[in-house]
Image (cartoon, rainbow over all chains, first blue to last red; front, side, top):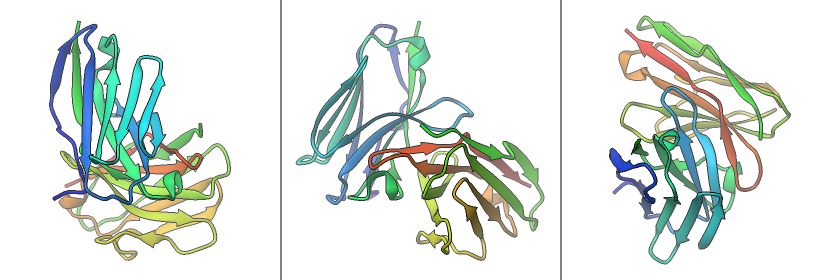
Length: 113
Length: 113
């Protein structure tokens, strides 16, 4: 079993829909949870980060962490064609960004105009 | 957030040769990291590079194959030595931005023939 599981997709939804992206993990030592967006032939771009359990909202994006279930989610409201990209979840232990990150494989998201 | 550049952006190399990838950051950072992103796979940490000390390698990666230099707080290099087609990948450097975050460069796309 991999440490972080993420459905690679592709996930195709119509413009304006709410998108739900998810990851599960097995290592209970993970404390910091991040979501990155990666466009084709570009490096990963940090979207959001959360510490421990709870929700965090930033514009159209909401990140949720449920440590009891070892499950994290990213919601995108009012999805736009420009949101089409690969979304990577990443996590680390108490060192946070000062530690190496463990990534999921990424979900390829397609927003249809 | 830090601005990170990598050189070269892409290269095609012959097996048995070596390639050195450069990573430059626009501000001084303590922690720099090198990752590999193989097709269909998760981003995988190769090593952590701190200025003034030996790089710390993850399981499965060795210094002879991936020597790293970190001469100052804004620069690092990763060399891929004695390359084989299995080394074809995207190589990314990242820096620790804060307790919660890590920022990535654009990546170097390597094809080994």
